[in-house]
Length: 510
Image (cartoon, rainbow, N blue to C red; front, side, top):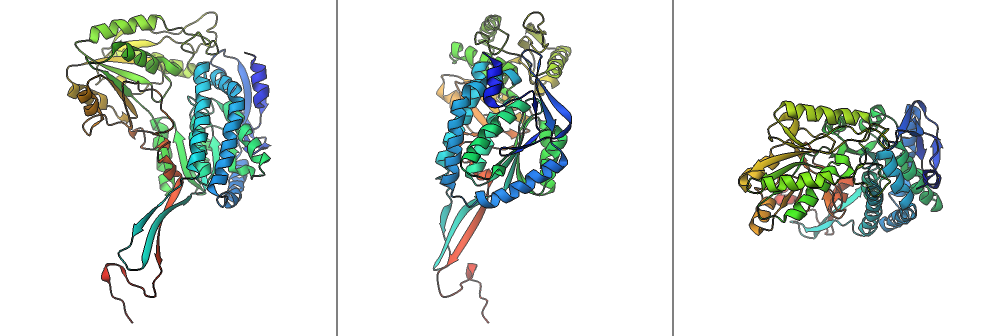
């Protein structure tokens, strides 16, 4: 694959401006964001920081654009999103390759992420004709009540490096058809993906004579993100990242009574029961643990296995891990690429050391790979460690391919282990036993926002609302009725009588 052609197709340069209002770009200030590919370690681009003045001007432009955009009929807004989806189809190969090279996930995962963008656009187009409220009966004669949804205004999106394009699309496609305008701060670890997406959508807006401020881009570190979270002009902040980040964002937005959608950490478990299909279980476990090099919020981090099949499953896992090919993610024969950067490698090594010091027993050895093809220093081996759920290390999410192997005796115990972590994003059970499956999905079952049967924890379809409970933040994005979070609800009462009857029979005559 010729990466120069990829960059050219997407309009990515060696030096890139910081900010955009549609197709209008501005320069920015020092310091610069240097994008280094974890695949090769080479510098692939430089992006300026957004200045405070640029930011303020962008928000002012957004306010003006919102006045126009909110009054464009929702199906017309859906048409703009449809065209964006069509452009993504044309740019899928290039954008997927950029995601793979800048972030480090496999090419198929990069292409799959762009496909998620296309899928959410398709979903949003249909949604644009279904922003439905409800009608209600009034207790007062000759009165009618109904409930409707209106656009919020400016939506700020703060995304993470691990899904550098899809999460933005999940939010913006819905926000746009709901009548909002959007400002995006991508992760400073993947700024080029943000620039590429901005240019694709900007071309659609320009072609349709839509104000460019419907789609805006800012770049920088956490300080730029703070401008968004503290700005009362920004009605909603959708933030994806660590629990630590979520606590800060949630508190700052709450201080000004703004709205927030928080998508934070996961510490996801998969239960394998004696009635499970072992082959499916192993495939689901391995992909869930090593896909995206363990850098998904839905990564399988804990494998809870019944003691009667524990040794058998362990041996199959060890055998499967021996077959995992690690290397350049653009090479489709490889299963796993690098971690995002050397800091992530340090956290990976520290987590292994910590769990061993707590009593964990390593059954598949880890380590940092070196030599030809591994020059970036970001390639690591996936690890399996026998552990106890109570270990501090196991209770903590580490964004790396570390799988903790846990044992249980009965399903009640397994569910208790599954739920006994601060996070509550994704969960799964492998079983052909209907009673076990239904118990896992019942009120006494998984306490996560996602609970699967006979598929792994990793990945989610855009048709369902994505998000989790507890320290995962409670937010929901993507499908189902997640669109309601991007709108304000209004209850309406209409009196078509010649009198003014008061509620609950109250008399107020004079």
